[in-house]
Image (cartoon, rainbow, N blue to C red):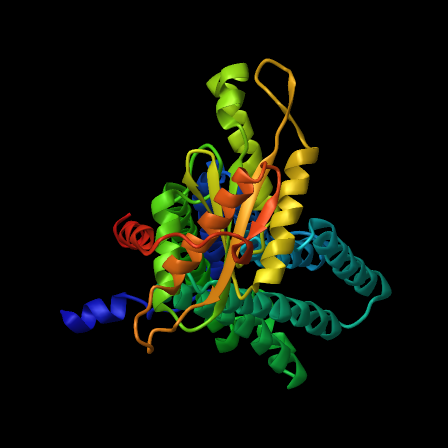
Length: 421
């Protein structure tokens, strides 16, 4: 009975055309899956649109190759290759957008047009197919390997398993096209024809099917990880000003205190006569002033700096790897910008603002050194300098060296606040 059944059932074999059709459907499925992420905002939305477009182009290209010998030659050779080139560039663009890299869409479009013109020229000039394969696959290998390199370099905050899968799938994509380059150079060009029943073509199509799904799942997981980190960061920020909340800012100071030894400075900034702004323009007017100063601080600080809302109308900026002179220049620039600004109030009036600032610098002791309250002391000095600037007439900057040092009992209170907030 078993022999009869075995004789009746044909041996299992894989057909290249069937695999082409199946892989194209997987491309369409991947495009639909990631298109649902396009309802997000910002970088995630742009990245999702690029990845979904990439998978759609890949699916359409595979379907065009599936139609080989059923349609005119130019369909798979021109349309199919045009789509597969768009697939590579859009996959690269998706990861560039996800990590907010400044890859201009116009530059990507120019590269694509250059590739497309070359493929059309190859077809019109009757250049042997092998040259077109080498040209096309070289670009695709570079683009997909570049995408893998972006993940390695900029995906440090993504969970390690997801980052490894994303890097591996993009690397396999690149390797599949590199294999076609090697096969062409070794004279096996017929074996990598779209519908060739060769081992290398069957293996390539199987690998492409697996990688389409694997890379899309990895991309979706990276997007979800990106969203999660954005939510955590949003919870750390003051809703009105966009700077860190008091607790989040003190967390940054605590990390500085126990981290490696480094130079730093603190700048304390306070809006002058803030109660008068509230009395004249209402609390919404006060909110407008706070929002303006918060936006100013986010715009003028360095990427390594940390800005927090210390309380009420008072802000504090932690400047890492920065000396007192540089902090003083920054504080003076802030005060000058605020004094020159005219903030639009909710009632349409333009209100003038001024601010006072105090600053101080120091060097953290480092994790291996005896624990000393360096950060606390620098904050106390900057706070005293701000107080002296306000007492001296406001709309000015005061250095810690020019201010009175607060009493040691006050320093202890600051230390308790630093550890408990």
